[in-house]
Length: 158
Image 1: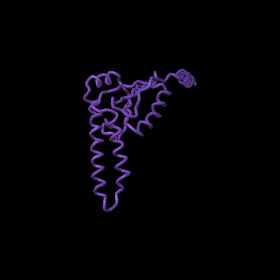
Image 2: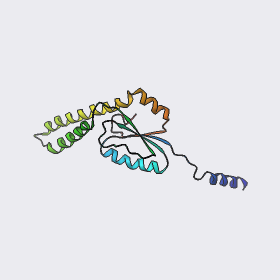
Image 3: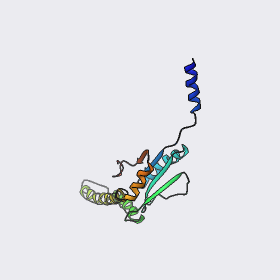
Image 4: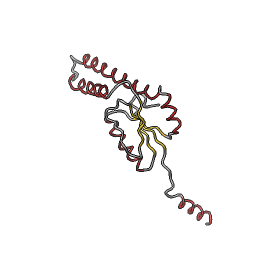
């Protein structure tokens, strides 16, 4: 009986003393970012420390002045126009080149060009973080407990 009382007292004393974790978020552009914003809001509500990695050429991800959220901006060799162009080319190629038995080969040739551009931009984004020794040291020093990233993105599975 005394053990149960002590255990109950210990449990009561620990209510509300949980600490938020240190979370690093490396989002992708477009609809992925819109979904990640919801996750970020929930993490902040639960008092986690949230840091978001943002490419200097990001189109949709705009740093805000929220004190619960840190944006770490890293350099990439392209501007917003390049991301916008890749997205536009993908959508237009998909919509304007409806594959039919006689045009399927052309459709895949056009789509291959767009995917190549996407992978080139993705590689520049990866290099912007992974080859930036100063940024990598800062991230390591921050001791993040978890990384939230987009697994479709080429660097998303690191």
